[in-house]
Amino acid sequence: MPNLMVRNIPKDLYRRLKENARRNRRSLNAEIVAILGDEDGWVRRRMEIAAVLPELDHAREEFANEYGELSDSLHLIREDRDSR
Image (cartoon, rainbow, N blue to C red; front, side, top):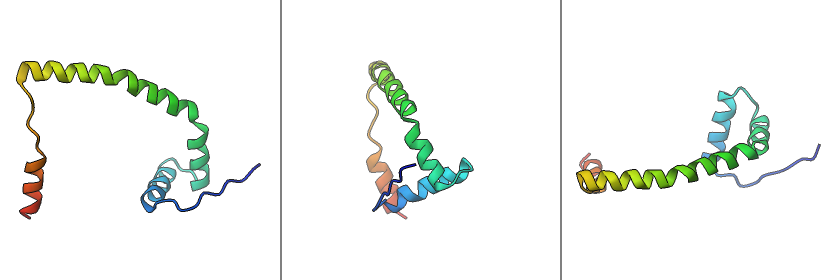
């Protein structure tokens, strides 16, 4: 079987891969092979998401028409964080 070497993986990605492998009771190598082998699953999920996005946009427009635009809460979050 061919080998594949991947270098310079970000620490956060490595940590998430290890955690997923542990959760799925696989070795890190087996987890990566499973992820790479599930190409059809990734494509299907992306297509499902792409199909839902127009529905979400429509629902957001209907909500805004009925209740008005929602305010941006970013400044409230920053204010709360900075007050600590």
